[in-house]
Amino acid sequence: MRAAEVEKAQYAEKQAAASYTVALSNGDDADEQRAEKVLRLASEALAMVTRGKRGLAATAQAMKNEVEKLDVEIAEIREVLKDLRQRQLRVARIMWADRMDKAAQEFAAVAAHLEATEKALGWTSSLSELYVPLQTPRGASCISEKTIRDKAYALSMEQLLAA
Image (cartoon, rainbow, N blue to C red; front, side, top):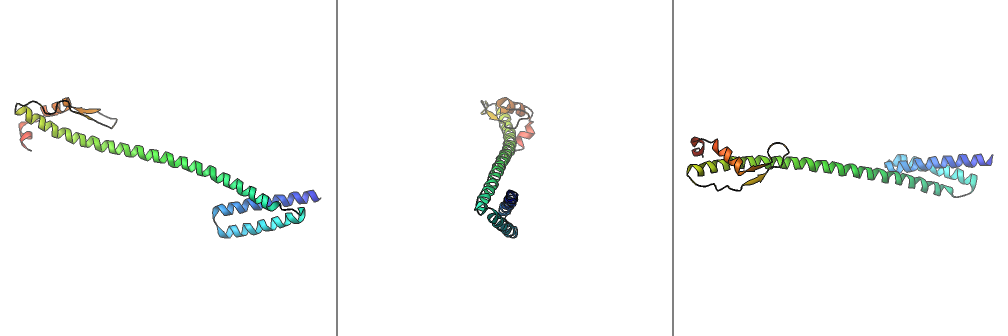
């Protein structure tokens, strides 16, 4: 009979300790106070049955278990945040590459006008060995002297003089 009473009291105290640590981690003061009172009563009941100080050990173990659970959750959240940061950086890279490619295309249009004007004057190209890498995965990989020459060939005299 005494062993059953001790077991029942120990079980009640462990449940109360677990409830108390959950209330602590949730940060609800009212729940924490209720859980603390239940724990105190359960610990006193166990002490009466066993005449020992097992309440503190049970609370410490329950708190340790709760801290371990929180540590695991924190590690998981850190991984999620790390993955999100990588995704943000990939999106930012795509945006910057797109902006660079648009600027490079504008540059190519201006360079084509310069090339065509120099050709109309009978001069040699000042854009030899031109190479501008493009960043986005679609389309051409660069703007070269040939790209500029092809664009320049398509320009009319009126377009050259419209500057």
